Amino acid sequence: MKVYGYARVSTARQSREGLSLDVQQQAIKSYAELYSTGLDEILVEAGASASTLAGRPVFCDLLKRCETGGVRAVVVVKVDRAFRNLRDAVEVLAMFSKRGIDFHSVQEHLDTSTASGRFFLNMLLSLAELERDKIGERVSEVLRVKKAVGPGETGGAMRHRHQTGKLAVGGAPYGYQWEDGKLVPEQREMAIACEILKQAAMGRKSPKIASDLRLSGSLTRHGKVWNDRQVRRIIKLKGMYADG
Image (spheres, rainbow, N blue to C red):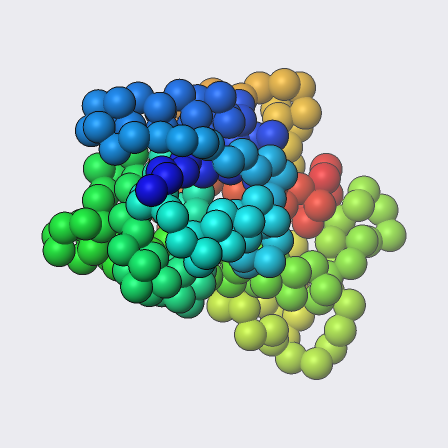
């Protein structure tokens, strides 16, 4: 009965931030040695998204091996290396359970051979899918806003194109406000946003920019001090601002 490891990265950023294929493989090997699970082979998948199983041919090959029998366990570094879609996870893990295959995750200290391990896995998968859906919602919101605004005649300022009423995207993006169903620049916020982009273009990092904003007494739209995350959000949406 074989034990397989599975390692995956979807982007170069993941490799830089500590989830490189080499790091994953070493972690799987160490886990197998520590818990005496055994390890016959580690299957490696680079540049593959976790959103669907079809987009990961190496993982699909692993599943075929499991379906044909002779597999005792599958080991990954994190659950989201194998699954981000709850429906796929349920189907795959049901197949694992039917064939007596245990599923192990190194970082979550997860072992589905135990009842508590199976319960914890279900919680992790639900949280992973929630986060993925939230990311999708944020991307969709940005796209809807960008469709509603276009480049101004000068300075690259983004102005409202349509006169069809407010968009269903909640509050106006930072630097803008709603007036008569149109997005128009809010001068104070726009000035701050443009200064953030100017500093970023000069190579200053977002934590330092946020620190300078706090020292200057500048506050966010909601009257709070600036933090790194809020500055990075402005930088990511730089195409919506005059200096973007």
